[in-house]
Structures are given as structure tokens and as C-alpha cells.
Image (cartoon, rainbow, N blue to C red; front, side, top):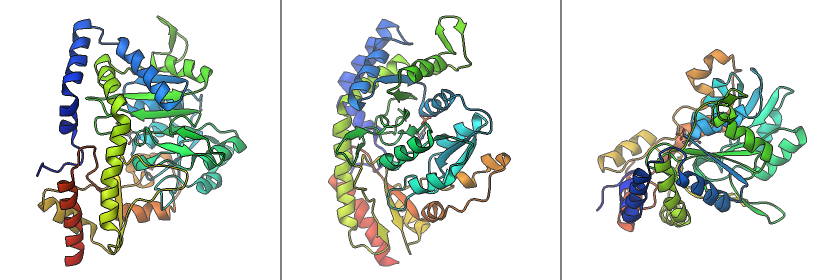
Length: 377
Ligand SMILES: *Cc1c(COP(=O)(O)O)cnc(C)c1O
């Protein structure tokens, strides 16, 4: 059996090796390492894939979020509503810009921000909402956009884990995550569903004014070379990464299918196993399974993690400390949060290996090892 990994980038690369190697060598030979043609081609391909007007490539998913927030002209102390149950980048950039993160609980079924929680957290100082499509499942964008319209608040979708995910609205419209809010952001970190071979990220918007501003911010605040109108930063996707991502974008739907197949195998094998809740799907979203995350009740999570590790099966806790309990925010004088679902999930989630290259032998070994542990304990 092939070694089981959380993410198997090497096997995935082998299948595209000839094409990717050539694309990288072409960049080396062109010497257009910064802003080369593949960067523009990738932006155009992504724009068509997502159905979004503007794609602004940048250096990573954290920068994408930071640049998105910078484009909103917020003032220190302005409040930004985000889930606590997410990767730190989502909330770190809020703090970095001297804004105040306001943590909201998540929905127990989807792991994504609870729209009613957003409504309750809105104050006159609220200036933005940042939902996260966690683990590859969409947040309830129809409800979130309704609330945002009601209070005239911009929405930034953190789509780092869900590129390709589709949201169905009650009028039947289908939109891809990242193209629904005022701005969407993503990451091309190697282990993401659309991952490069280094760092990378992108920002999406349908708004022309915002697009100009986002481009300027990502490029030292200039619209014309050496004339810097606003404070920006330097955040670029390099040409080699773009050339690789352009090839991998063509495979993204196949990758999503492969992830769904693996997820289907897991879900079937765990059906009826006491104490295990498998990921659920809201009626409005499909799933791109960036992670396959179990909720364990009455099962010793560390025990299971150890038992699997002894069999060389990795499993991970995403994330062991929620945002509202991170020391990083101590200086922000945040209130004592009561986020019961977030705290409850934090104690019980366990993610199993999930990638495009899992085969039946591996899946069978993983699922039988998990059930073996539960039957023994
Ligand atoms: C990975 C990730 C990011 C950050 O992306 P980087 O490219 O690593 O900076 C932001 N938000 C979420 C939810 C992520 O999973």
C-alpha cells in the first residue's frame, strides 16, 4: 500500500509532470519571472471558471485578505465580524490593520459562520463581514448577503478552502464561492484544493472601482509607475506559480470529483458507527472537501489520533484553539465570548487524510482502523 498522507502532492504531480515541467522551463527560458504572461492567463482562466469579473493574483491567501480589508477604507477600531472557528489568517489580518475582530459562532452542521449570530453581533461600529467557507463547504451566503444588504455592510468571502464550491440560491441561481460577496479571496498554498508549488493567492471582485483599488494596493499603491497615491504593499503571484496553477486549474473539477469520491467512501463506511458524525451538506451548497472532518462524541480523540498514528495514518485537529481563545487578541480587550458550538466542535473535530490520490486500499485501511479503535474502546 502507498504511504498514507494527509495530502499527497507528489502522486498528484507525477500525473501532470511532463506538462508542468515544460511550463516551468518555459518560464525560466522567458525570464519573465514577475508579471509574465502566465499570470495574466491564469487570472483570465480563473475569472471564467468562477464567473467573476476581476481576478487580482497576489502573494498568498493572507495577503489577499489583508488587501481586501485595506480596500474598504476602514478606521482603527472598526469592527469586522468573522467566525472564530477558522484558520488564524482570517482574523489575524483584522488585528494587523488595527481593526477589531468580532467573533461569531458557527453552525454545528456546516462548521461555517451562523447568519443569525452575525445579525446579533452587528453594532454601529460594524464595517465588514468576513465569512469563511470552511473545509470546502459554503457559508450560508444567501442569508449573509441579505443581512449585509440590510445593514449596508461589505462582505469579504474567505474562499481559501473552497475554490470551486457552488452555492444554490432560492431563485435557482448557482454561483461559485468567492464570486458572491463584494470581494472574495483565496490561497494557492500547496495543500489547498488548487495549490501551487509555493505560495500564492488571489482576490476576486465584480466591482470595477474595488478592482482598481485592490490592484493598486497590491502594487505599492500605484496606478502609474512611481506615483504612489495610497499606502499599499507588495504582493505578487510569481510567474512560475501562475504557470503551474494554470495547468492545475484545468484539473480542478476532476480534483473535486476525486475528493468527493473519497469522502463518499468515508461517509458510507462510517454510517451507523456510534459516536461518529460525518460531514453534512446544507441544501444550498455542494462540497469540495478541502478537509474531511469527523465530529467525535464519546470517543477519545487523542486516543484515536494516536492509534491511527501507530498504523501510519495521519489525522489532524483543525483547529485546536479557536480565534477567541488565541493569546494574539489579548491586547484587543475583547469581551468574554460564549461561543458554545465553536468550543464544542474544537474539542471534538478530527480530520482524516483527504486528497485527490487516495485509493480504495488506503481508504479501506483508514476506515477499518477507525472503526477497529471504536469497537475496542
Ligand atoms: C490557508 C488559509 C488562509 C491563508 O492562506 P495562505 O496562502 O497560507 O496565506 C486563509 N484563510 C483560510 C481559511 C485558509 O485555510
